[in-house]
Length: 398
Image (cartoon, rainbow, N blue to C red; front, side, top):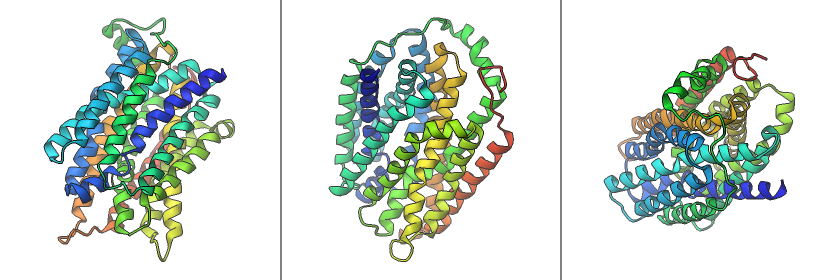
């Protein structure tokens, strides 16, 4: 048990070190170094959404039916590393977009597959998975601190580091425990969609959860694309380092997740997480590094509660609901909804919002920009609380 725990923890550490190298700071590099517009930044962040709309669900089907998860993970990471390196070698928007889109097509499915592999090998996933997943958050923190320490937010080196970590992850995946398709998986796509997957999609509690996760991507998109540029506009010292406070709080929330699950229902956990996505932008809007820095720190720190009690709780709830042989497919479907359809709409809307409130001199009206994700986050949370009813195994209410 200890050995598998350590191996899966390293898997998550490498997985999130890749994203931590660029996800929260790429917007600054694109705006300040490559001089892309807010719309172009939104389009590039939308690459992950397009990829998630196409690849995770189908890759999950392959893992559940025809190929070992660890081998598929290794192949996808090696391909993604090549594409990320290509993006680091160009300053042209068209080529940059091309390489980032290819990278996303290979990289996005690995999140659902990594989750599926962990859930398959960990006993009592509600208790043990957060302790494994927290190492991904620690990796993100270390990446952010490194970017801040060496002032790399506007430097292409962040992409080269991401390519290196992707290459390491690809090689490591081939050493993971064998994770073949589970017995009972439908080998035929027609039988799959006429049976259990259709039952999952028709289940009321899962339908509400899926819709809420998609809608929550609208406020989430603002964080990854524009919080770092916002902090830079405020002349905050070491903004990438400051943003790691959000990951530090995320680590604490993950470690406390077993305690929270034993005391609160999934309904109230997820509602609180969704609400936090909206509230944090109101706090950011009130913050200023000189007059009121505490609001900035609180808004960033709220990231842990927002992510842990919405996305992570939703993953654990989903795993408790689906049959084992549909684990990769279900996790891939969530990636499709959140990193795909929802993130695509969110990235586009966030980019357009910034464009609407960018003045002719290039300055941005951040107070007005943050109004949109605040209202969206609160509205989604209230809708979820109204509609969601927790259920047990598929088809059995609890």
